[in-house]
Image 1 (tube, rainbow, N blue to C red):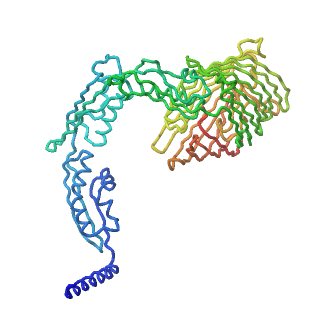
Image 2 (cartoon, rainbow, N blue to C red):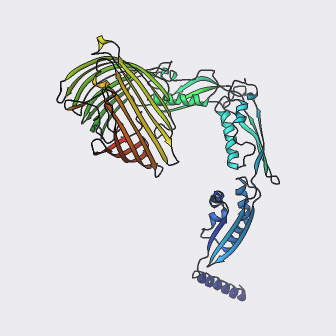
Image 3 (cartoon, rainbow, N blue to C red):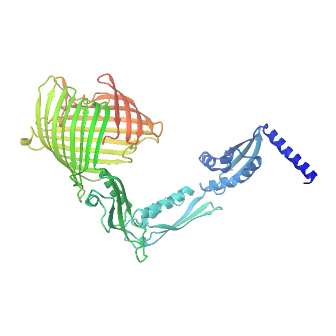
Length: 589
């Protein structure tokens, strides 16, 4: 090797090492970005601007910083264009203070782009359908989200196209697609012309039902829960309803309901009759469970359960439980028949229970039949029941009662979430009576109404209101099971469970009239945790003149658990001048 070249390389290597050693003792240069732009758009730029994302990179160099600063104005323009600002004026400035390199960008937004024209074009079978069929072209045009005169935003443009396409996909045209779309912006006039061409494809109807996964149960279990008729128009909501019915039946661990709308016919033509495919995984036939718990109403609890979901191999579902609590003990069983083709859900039930609350001890047995129908949003039932009971009171005479009753009930659920509702209402109406004096101690009619409403005052503040009214008509007193008492977790907080009623001897017994209500405000401090403030009122009495409400006030904590809201409250009972703790879980409907 040449001697001079060797010396040169040695000196160069020494210089690099010396510079690297010296650079370790120099203060590291820092980088900062400042953006002057109206607040709603500042967060957009701070979140997506490349120079901000890379400024804290440990490998950042002055050369790279200058490159990012030079490209930042175009980056800003591209981001602002998604919000409808296509002609902003951006003034960049690079300065250095105390070894901090500062990139400042002053942004003048300019005039926003407004939508001037909207052209929606349709092709496919939708042009041939009847004017009464859905989806209707005129309604699709009316529901288009971006109207003339509105500001153009890329997010709204994408959402409008998705909404238009979804309206076809969920009803009649599951193979619809957007064949063309354009948003032409005129920067000089700050206007935009929108065009979407959507191909509905062929109208699709439901075909035959195909079932997979059944081992113990007959096909009729699924067929009777199917709300879809062969040949009816494709509807995604019908598929979801079918799936929900199967899931709620408790026969299956998992359920998947789909319609094959993609597979072409043998000759290559598009499918017009989509077969419905149901894939299920059956639940275990026998289930046993043991549980312990505590309720501020009835005390400590131990519970045993035994379920047979295929009784006698006939698809009958038997559920039974033994619940032992400090104030109540109950043995109950129910056998549910498979749903009928008409959607009826029939059941047979029986129970024996003993309660001892507020000086009244009741031992009762009952057996009954029940028929329910309807969806969860509107569920109804009728039933017949035979009840016998022995009632013992502290300081008063005991009695025996019996009654053969008929009942009707309806429950409406109009809430946005079954487990943790934030908006909507629940309504339950029940009537039960003994129409024949020969089959009861006396004829009577019990009427009961309960409602609960949810309203979001703000994004994090919720109003919950509850009310219930009960009344028993008839010359003779009804059995204790059909009379009303109030107080406790789901009634009037601040008072003992069923401690509000009619004084008889040394006991509190049920009255012929009931009214309770509650107004509660929940402030959610995090997505899962909140604090509550509430006022409860109510009472039970034998006459309307004696029905004077008492009040309870309190504070509580709330947690949105996977199984519903869990609450812990401390309430003050104004009439008793006492404080009580209350715990509750879920939505009591």
